[in-house]
Image (cartoon, rainbow, N blue to C red; front, top):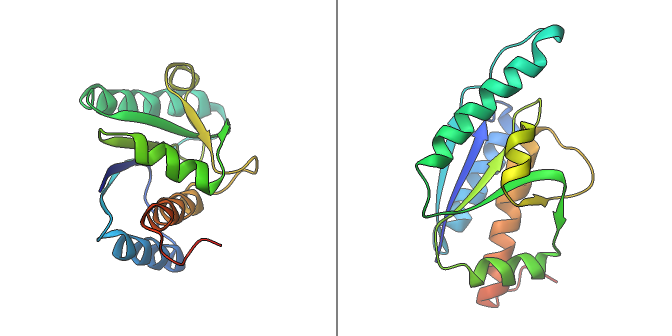
Length: 153
C-alpha cells in the first residue's frame, strides 16, 4: 500500500476539479494512504512574483525538513518523464513514504528545483489545480497496474 502525501501550494477551488480530486481519493482508498497538505499561496502583484515564490519555497522547505523519512519528488515540466507503467514500477519499489510537491501558480522556487528530483506529468504546463487531478489519476493508474486491475490498457 502506498503512503503518499501531495504537498501543494494553494487548494483546488474549481468545483468540477474538486469533484475529480474526491473521486480519485475515493478510488485510491483500497490501495493507498493519501494525504493532501495545502499550503497557503502568497498573493502578489506583477513586481512581487519573485518574493512571493521565495516565500512559498520557504514554506515548502519547512514542511519537507520535517519529512526526512520520505522520498520527495517535485512536479515540474522539465522533470523526468515516466510512462504510466514506469511510474507504477518505480512507486512499487519505494518502501518509504512518498511526498509529491506541486507548486502554485508561480511554479517552484529554483533552490527547491536544484535539491530534489523532478518528475513531469507532461512537457505541457497545467494549472496547479489540474496537475493535482492528473497526479492523483496517475497514482490510481499505478495502483491498478500493480494490482493487475483492468484500468490501464
